[in-house]
Length: 294
Image 1 (cartoon, rainbow, N blue to C red):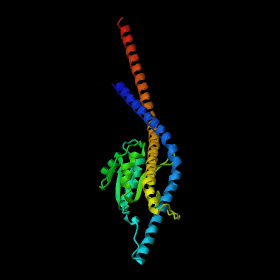
Image 2: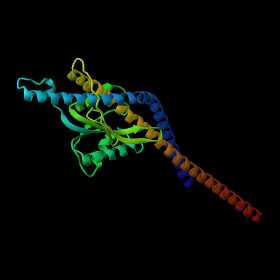
Image 3: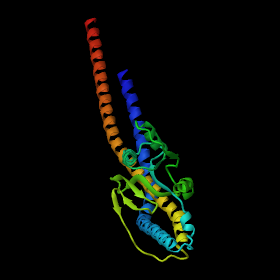
Image 4: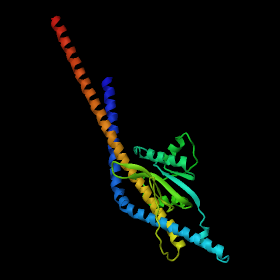
């Protein structure tokens, strides 16, 4: 019976080992697929985000100038820039649909929850696991849920979320950032051009531009096109961090699995040796009795 239990445990451990190896190999393939494109565009989009911030700053300056003119000259009419009514701030938590991504999702959630306790605004949760974390928290918070595939392939899959976010003046996204295969850190970044954020650091930029054909058209372009690109880049960076975190988790799991497999093999050998010794003793005892009865 004991030997049967050991064999069952060995079979289970080897199955788990095979699954862990498969998860690790798939994650490595995913990392190789998205890493180059994410890292190649990261610096470009970071600079583009700075320009977005400057464009919105220029927009506000233009509005202030027009307001001053309208007060001095009552016949001055304000253009459609004044009709760009937007809601306040929204914080977005990028999680995942599945688990086994190590601790990165939980770490991002902790950072996101700090935002909830300190700031006002609306909240959005992306991914089933994030929804599970929100629902499992003792303190209930109203939020909007969006579902996205863990393997984002096209910007079209982001369309519904992107369209919803464009109605907010300020959009802060909380996600796991890939630094390297060892480190993945929880961060938040502003992707709406309202202000630039990198973890807890805030940087102000003020560059003046000339705009053709006009400032409103340039701002509309940024909000419709660049905003979606910044959101897509952030989602892909979160995906990259998740898979890197999974590789780390599977590496740690495989170490423990190998230890468990070794211990079970030792137990199996000890049991076999003990069983062989018992049979040998029984055989010797049988021979002894047979000799006595001759």
